[in-house]
Length: 325
Image: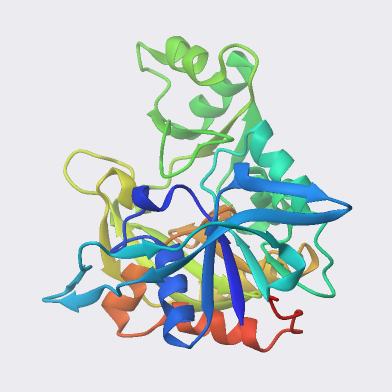
């Protein structure tokens, strides 16, 4: 079958870290043709979604002494062609956030894909509905105390109540722009002004001391947890995100975390959010990541599994599309 991945420029991807590469490698190893394109290469022509896409051949990364090592060059591309998205089995929308206006327009183009012919992962309407910070607010019973506001006084009152808090931009990714704040911080007002620009809401969560022990990423496939990795802060950094130096550590999914997954799963299935990474700290849900969640490479390395293969096997079980002519 043919699979299309909408990704950032492939030369910017890290073959030893990016989940998109792990899934593309798995698809190729299982005998499928992998195509790549970018969000700005999508079109609607006569009511159908098309992409200027290129077949890609991957030289697979291998585990060497506990780390992924990719041959160089690790990919080669064939000539581009105009590809109707309804002639592939599945389209993976894997462009990194932030979800900007052009990003939203790309999801509108993907709305033109006939779901009876092609599966879009994740569903474009689901991506639009699921801001990765705000979506979690459906599940406040398993979240830390959280507010969303741009009001300096509202934020101050919350931080004073909890003693310490974490500020998160609603459109951020990979830990970017996350701030630790206490009520006696002499820069308190300035930090709020920088975060909100005076008019943009931010998420403010009570600081969880368990964050020192790690921020667990749990990967869910169609609502089912299939693996987890703990991201542990290093040095003086309070964030555990791997993009800012967090150390990946082996992790099991606890009974409490299984309860969280069971709580979240119906909403994910309802919204067509098939491949998702939820973040859990100290038994509390903090985020639901739906755009291009990562973690596959680290889980595979630490647990000796192949989650990319599991994702492609799931795709194979879905309704097939028409063959590429």
